[in-house]
Image 1: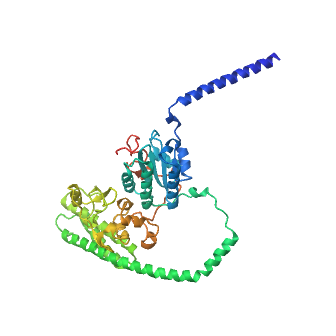
Image 2: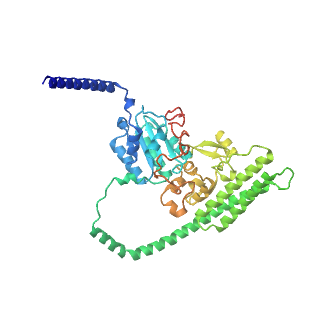
Image 3: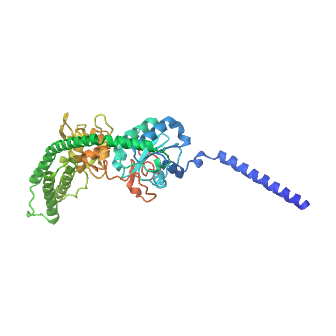
Length: 454
């Protein structure tokens, strides 16, 4: 009996000691800095796999429930892989983008508002580094979270590619469809079949006529480009057998001539507006070959491969990027030739390529959808969305109907995207870029600082 009492007493003492330790730990935990209790990246990623917007409890004052719901519905309705996280100002920033992208495991555009700071990163298959940089810059300085996130979302959805991950809709269950409803729908479809067939034929004829008109308009512009390139070849006055000519020079000249002939041949065979992209791509290749040849003849270093001058591709390859703000649009960086760089630096207007439109002569980015294939051939490789943010052509090319009318893939507008795909940790961090140019830290290598360099 005494042994039992002793054992019971010992057990009671151990319980009392354990309670005391737990109480002490609770006090210490309550007094610890809040940063140690920050929501884990894994938790944020798990939420983003289910919906496009995550608002941390400690940052809930930045965005009301109604505002968050509206933003979430907008992104889901657009069917784009845009992920937004709203986090408190003290959240750890080191490698935040890389860690979040790895944990979420979905190709997309990731934007984070941390306190009053904002930055974004994207897989290049969804949005180019230049486009991300321009989009983030366009909303910097907007202190109100709702305004900044709404503006960024509006512009990003209009320019990014890809589709939303299936997990966003997999958790929702729809109501069953009754047999009566299916039968009724079938009857309606059969009854309307003849009328629908007639309407389709009429729309096809109208669409074909619009395509012919667009191609005719493009022929004028492309013929001007081909003629200008031919004149450049003549002015060059290079002869393969001239004194000082070597094999690299002759190779450059041959590539330029081939590009000239290819452009003429492709344009003669063009049957649709989207066929023009191959023509302007050939001209861009030819102009770069001429730039190389010119540098070799002058004994200068070979030029870097850069896109043509944004204001007029006939100016040749760009030599630098310059800040430019279109009327009523957001400031962005565009590739420019030496002459236009000087004009902008002096406060003068660049020499802009104007083309015919329904409203008279207009800059090509304000002249209508037919010029998308033309611009896409010059500015491919993902650069075009960032250049055309906020312009009429940029908005048109980002519309879902554009690909069916003028083809897809013009500078990564509307085609070739893999956004929304599950990649897990298998992605190139160097390909996951944004405003700061880095893949992991906020601000792109600013010591882990968010928004470094602003």
